[in-house]
Image (cartoon, one colour):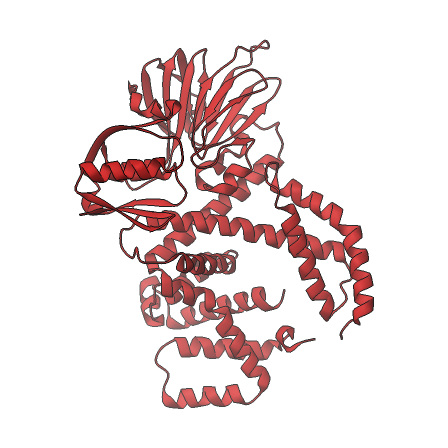
Length: 340
Length: 171
């Protein structure tokens, strides 16, 4: 056995930890310091145990060097939640397809953003990609950038689980008359014979709670928030849109056509605050687009092509021509909108 | 006790041939369709097996490989989660835009390891640890905030460090 892997006696490890805690407790006195040095030099294994503790504390020392306390805590909490959600979702999946409507691993979607969530899905698009998909029943879907769906077709039902991103749904009539539902964390949407648009809105500074945005351009959809599974579903008619949360629906509003522009490969903004624009563009490029708070509430109106490489760069450049902002590129993955 | 090299090579190639196919399959199933990292994970698991073999003979290669591969998958998902969380954390702030890609790599790596260490810790111990090592509070300050004695804080820190030590060195 090499020294590197040698198991150290429990009492030595305990003693080293005791010193670590004692020295961390406050400014050690010279006498205490001397006793510590004496202990450390008394035995090479003391030395080794101490080195291991030093090495072990690398992760939190590095974290403190590069992140503020609030950043570190936020990132840890969020990542921890995502992992817990993932485990919970996997357990649900393991229970089998016999589970109820909401028994699927739908909780993965927004708590598990990023490539892993997408790659594990039945169908997904990469960043900047837009893709048409036809399901086994003939239902046609259009997937926006960075979108992931799962499909669960059983003899009783057809479910599309939207885990990330946004989709347009053209439901196909089903010979077995199975209803077609789009399922998210927030609830489910029964698609009639019409055209339905569903988007997962991430939880962001301007909308701290994640929500599902549902728009209907043809026909009628029926919405049932997750927490109101026993209540009758609420209809949403063509030309309307609403936001759904697990505990309810916002009042329906007229459909915002700018929200559907992506389906034609366009990005439309009608008086859109820059902070929102930054978030929207982040869906279409790898990395982050950040917006300085000083210019966050400036508004922009415009209509830009969204496809092709560099599309978001061109949009940002155009924003800088119209508003007193400059686009600062830190790295390829890191762009900031800043005041001039 | 070190295993001689030629014996080692024979044993390892036998193990590799016997175990590589099912390990790839097992990983493929865990990863789900559409993602093929199974070869990389399997490779890495075998490298760890080789490293372990140099120190002592592994009696149950299958159990060892499953344990290592599970750990690798957990690391993988943890890393993805930390990356996403860190990205979002940054997106909320306009300051310190000077950090380089390398700094990001470092902090993501560190957060990932930290998350791993903190995962199975009782909530209060974890909070005390974070207050001390991340918030930079002194033991008396922590004790004051949580309305406990300094001794309770010290004991919690001792437990946390022992837990981290076990994870890092008794695996």
